[in-house]
Amino acid sequence: MQALIWGGAALTLSGVALLGWCVRLAAQARRIADEQAARAALARVIAWNMAALGLAGIGLMAVILGLVLR
Image 1 (cartoon, rainbow, N blue to C red):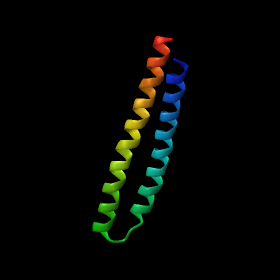
Image 2 (cartoon, rainbow, N blue to C red; image 1 turned 60 degrees about the vertical axis):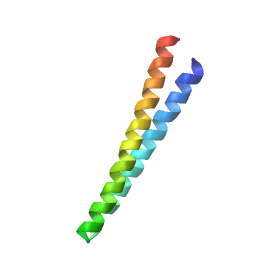
Image 3 (cartoon, rainbow, N blue to C red; image 1 turned 90 degrees about the vertical axis):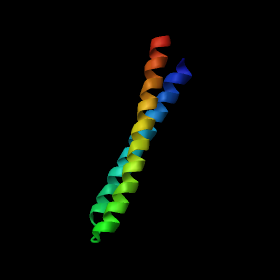
Image 4 (spheres, rainbow, N blue to C red; image 1 turned 60 degrees about the horizontal axis):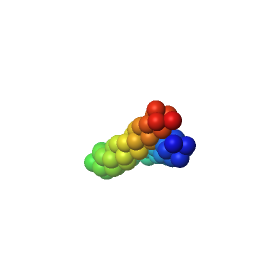
């Protein structure tokens, strides 16, 4: 169960790091002058943001499962 806990913690931290990266990308996309290009950039950021949230959520579930089964 230790591997499940530590693996889940690693997934969660990876997801949180990706969320920080998404914030940086969104800030850059908001500086784009062309509205259509800015919308396209933000659409790509949304996809990465959802993936990061999913990764962090799966990691948290793994940690909880490891603690419950411990």
